[in-house]
Length: 328
Ligand code: 8YV
Image 1: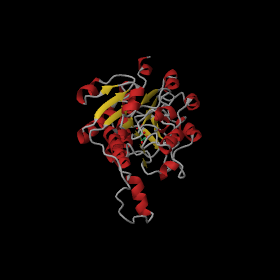
Image 2: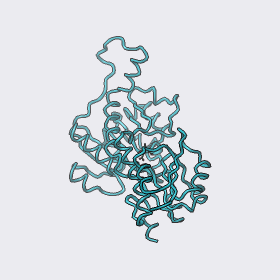
Image 3: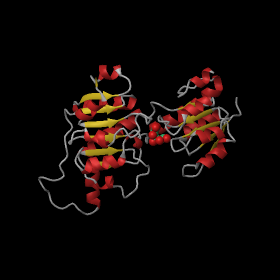
Image 4: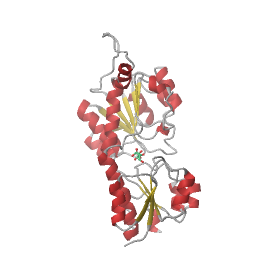
């Protein structure tokens, strides 16, 4: 059917790669166990028609102008802040992504971080490893309970909604949210209340971030924002590390502006091993594993492959970031 050449920038789950091969695509995979440098990626992309890539690949103006011959860039992720979509659109390159594939997996991580942080589990586990499990003390290691608390969701999309469902079902939490747009399904199903950003900060006991990284959200959780939160509150981020300002977060925890934080995303990634967050009692940090389940990663691989196949079959990309490109 096709002799189109696809370059895959990492070793992805093989179900998606096999789907491409079965549809007669010629697939080349980067087979080293590390992300490619941009120069390596440019060199390979120049020899291919389509790119199967992920968030560690820097698809900026420079890359796009060197590889403007590409038909489609198929991102193995729901977030695509590593791609200059405006430039890709200008150059007529389609950008595919994989929304929905990791919704449950990521909501599970946000939910687990909330509980683990509220009960200081990461810290207490480390203490056992370090040989410091001595006496019972009635007044130490105290966490906070979650029942009937207020959950604030920043970014009420698919993942935010799943997090809210879990919190409402398990703990009868009241749900408030802030987003660019109202989410009527969340208002109906979860009785979620839309509030402005400052009210979200002031009223949330747990504040969980599920937005995209954009110019509007970059660094929005800064000193001023943390200063408006409750001293008993827990901040959870499973979206992108750059949405919070990490130095300001450390200071907010240090000075008691907020009580705890659970992070699956940090800025930068990987986090430096000397980062003070790793020593704090009511903080839990994970190495960006929101989508790391067999089910989610396989679904992402199949969706990223389907986007490429659809493009060449009949210019019908099931999950396309920039539909303008195919209208031209
Ligand atoms: C992955 C992600 O951890 O989908 C996203 O936006 O951040 C995660 O699914 C990973 O970045 C896959 O590329």
